[in-house]
Length: 205
Image (cartoon, rainbow, N blue to C red):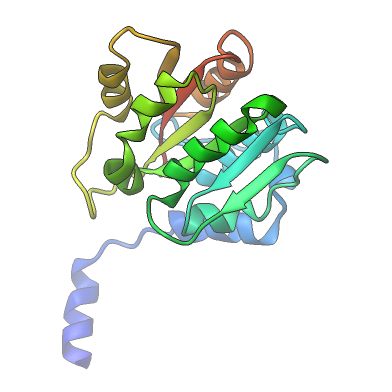
């Protein structure tokens, strides 16, 4: 085994990005992350995504639906304002269908659902988009594309939603690959498209 591990280590390329991001997220509340730090231009760090969700989107008129796994852990760090809803589940794909049901039930109260759904989960539940459009939901989904090539075939996620939309009803999609694009998309979601079903495909590193 020692010989195997030694030979394997010689073929692997160290990549500390995930560990460094984990340490940043684990040791600091989202709102206290260092401002002005240089960010990559080809992907968005998960910690940066949640920082802007917290600062720009959450209010007493919103509700957070947490995906299982890493996204559930990160959502635990969000500082929820009074009246902001919060639900989480432990099954892959749970959050997307749960968001549909929550949005339908919370519509009379005027709450807007915010959900981060991972690429793998979206692939098994995406058909719910049609029902969301039919009922005029105005939820916001961050379709988190891991871009690691593991576990599932890469889709054009925003393109899938556009195909289901087919020009009928209110739906807006965007793809973001850096923090600047993310902030711009959130500003649109909270402004011009505040009464619209929104899907933001986020390339996360």
